[in-house]
Length: 170
Image 1 (cartoon, rainbow, N blue to C red):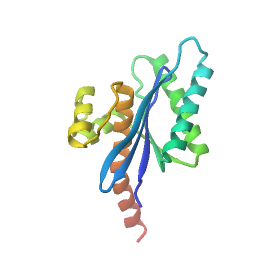
Image 2 (image 1 turned 135 degrees about the horizontal axis):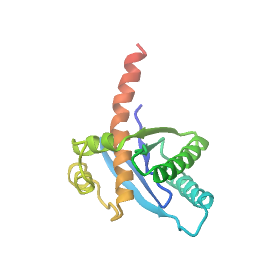
Image 3 (image 1 turned 30 degrees about the vertical axis):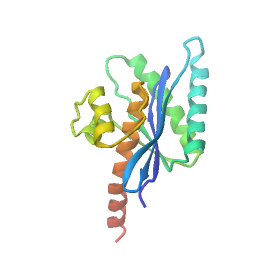
């Protein structure tokens, strides 16, 4: 069976986007989305704990069967990339504690799945989520919107993964 509810995560220590996306019949629907922010006055360990607690609460509230995380893009800012990687690690530990499968998607994969174009900008992703996929109630913060896009990417791909597993089981 394919995934019925996915928790999408746009990782970051300062801001972590979270979104629960589920099937509403044959169509995906946004159940909830939010952005968790952590203060710079806290130690990185305290910030990561806050993020882990928020992910744990989202899992308990929405009961996803899997977690989809946007893969960190290592660019010129290696300090920022390391911070995002730590946030991703905290998310993965919480998901593993809950017994959930975790998959990662690159920003290009997410943009392609949602808009059909791997070079789409944030506005185009939001527009596609609302107009093409029918998501209602998207928050203003882009981190939560990105998390919804990651969850949708995984949810749509879960049908393909299920079909591939069924085909390999013959």
